[in-house]
Structure formats: C-alpha cells, structure tokens
Length: 191
Image (tube, rainbow, N blue to C red; front, side):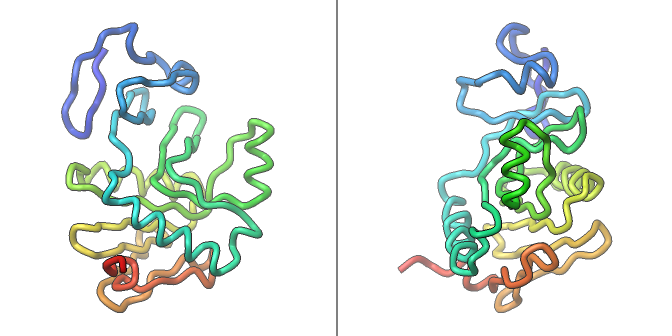
C-alpha cells in the first residue's frame, strides 16, 4: 500500500497500515506519526512539533482566562469526522460541552473553531484542501498560524480571511467572541 507523507507517496507493507477508514479508527500506530483519512487515502503527518507547543499553551491559557472552559474545551489533535468518509486531525479544536457529551455517546461532532499550526513541511495546496473541507463540514472559524513568519490567517469563510500581523488582533468571533489575541502576544518570547 502507498501512504501519502505530505507530498511524497511512500510504500508500506499492506499489513502494517489500515486499508480503510474503519481500520484506521481502530488502529494504534507505533511509528510515531499521526494519520488522517482523505478521499480513500491514508495521510501521514508528524503533528505539532515541540517548538509549536508554546502556541497551544498560550491559547489554552487565554481560553481559561476568558472563562470559555465553562462552556467547552480545547483539544489538541482530535479525530474529527468531517463526513462519513473524511477524518481530519486539526492541531487544535474547540468543542462545546454539548459536543463533548455527544462524543461520549459515540456521536460524530464538528467543532465550530479549529486552529492549524503550519510547519515548514506543510504544502499550501494541502492546507487549502483542509480549509475547504472544514467550511464544507460547518466549521465557522479557522485560524491558520505560521510561526516561522509570525502571521495568522483568520478565516470566517473561504472567501473571508483576515491576515493578522504585529499588533493585529486575531478573533474567534462569532464562536468565541472575546477570544482575541494580538500576533505579537502570541509570538512573544517567554519570560
């Protein structure tokens, strides 16, 4: 079987990887990679890197400071079934308490707000594929964070995007109206 690893196709042994979405959902990989299912194809990726964890940490603190933890949760790299045959793992996703409870009963839920932290190995057209899928599935706000360039793209639809730099405020409105942070604060050196 061939598995897509970013843009390259790599050959793997048939018994080593899932051959279907159902097999993927029951599979526990031991190779250190994470996997998504896209159009009948297994997609391998490495997930957030250690140097990207600071972004999750800063945003989690903001999430708690604003009191949003009372109405939901932030989850890193959750399995999100966008359709019956499309499974993605956004870097960070917000789920309401109601969605968490529905998931507890094995229902598939679509987060209203997701964040992708882009690494040097991510390809622009693959990122665009995900963003298109997210909005088609009903996600309302997508942040695409490029740490290497200290820029955040805030999407409220595929046609409406705000490019945030420096002191610009990134917002998760309408999902989390007071969830705002400046790009400079997001990338401020730790003290």
